[in-house]
Amino acid sequence: MRRVVMLTLVACLTAIFFYLSRFWYLSLWERPGLFGQEALRPQGDLISQWLRGTDAAPFELLIWALGCFAVLSLVQKLYDIFTSPTDTGEPHE
Image (tube, rainbow, N blue to C red; front, side, top):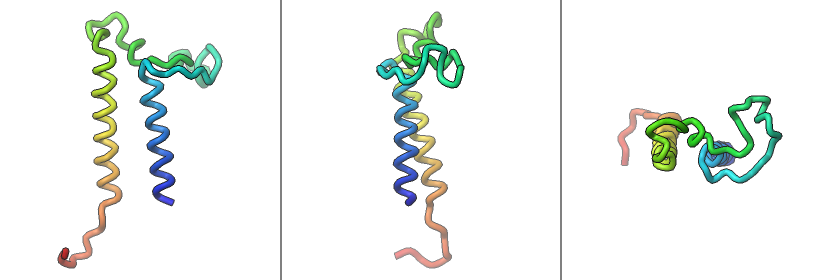
């Protein structure tokens, strides 16, 4: 059961990363935005939109990749903390 939950969470995280990138091509909701939020536009590419007009705009893909790596590293660390075997006091083999 834990494996199914973790796979679902990974799939959701992947969809979020995909939506933030320039590679989102799906249009799953209407023009005003998801849940009525104009910032969550149907064509994705939020990183580019957030960086528009800044000096970092040309590095949008690099920033997206580094952000994904950082978030995935953090999620892996949290997963390791929450699923670590409990120490029973017995010596390890």
